Amino acid sequence: MLSRIKVLPLAAESLGVRSMCTFVETPSLRLLLDAGVSLAPNRFGLPPHPQEFGAIIRARNKITEFSEKADVVTISHYHFDHHTPSFEDWLCNWTDAETACQVYEGKTVLAKSPLVDVNASQRRRGWIFEKTGGKHARKLEYADGKIFQFGDTKLKFSEPVFHGLQNTPLGWIIMIAVEYQTEKLLFASDVQGPMYNDTMQQILNDHPQLLIISGPPTYLEGIYVNDQQIRQGLKNLETLAENIPVTIIDHHLLRSTRWRESAEDILESARKAGNKAVTAAEYLDRDNKLLEANRKQLYEEDPPSREFEKWSKLPQVKRRKIKPPI
Image (cartoon, rainbow, N blue to C red; front, side, top):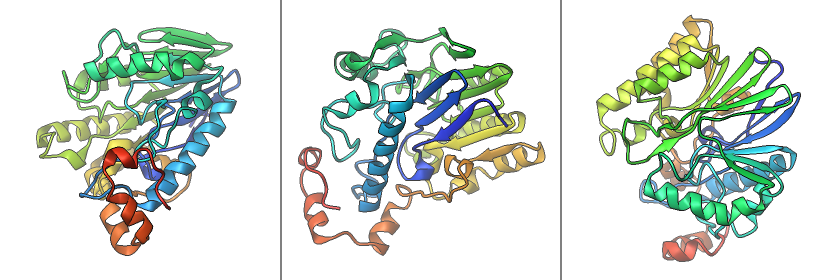
């Protein structure tokens, strides 16, 4: 366990939203990793349940609270669950024109380059961020492959690695290592297992004592990702959990109610090695709160109000501009 590097997950699937936002503090740096949060606009043919909107409001408040404390904010890539956009959207991202200003104003922002190793969507989003939320930053610097020193704290950014599979159309991300003296945390956001073996080896070579990582998207198995790719991601994650003292596994993997069944070998291998493999909620000694994965059940057990049902029937473009009646 780390003693000088303090780690506080703020938002994650195990906490009811799509995110990996984490606050990290060392004796010389306060750091906000991937300050974004989202909801799936449609899952099981249903929009987000009112309980999910409650969760994203709480997450946004947490992110705003801890952004005020942070010296540095990072962006591993430009998906909206990993950075805060500046447009109005009350359906998926719970943002308006002021939200990104609240998060990034006066901060040093260290971000994935939108110019190198980037797909068309993230190139556009990165350009938009530079012109909107990024303009509020004290300093915006692209961090791919760079090292930054803040007192005795070192931030080491990887060269871009695949967002899951090799040559995936989803593009690339950058991983972030936080080092203080002999302690090291590695934040590997959307590597999805990783499903790419070279990314797994890169993580092992970094020798972190604590790893924060996205598991493979088992909820997409047989739809967008084949069985072999999912198995590879789970196997690589098992290897990591067996070799790293503490692994926080969350994000894509926890979009399925059967995530623990999928992760059974991972959790057992970590236990046998004397290591810990936990979700973000479990790291905080909380119960997992998988709202998206249980969306259908939420609608059955906690039916929304008539006003909410009326709102939910509006076209999606209108729902983005009107806050839901929750």
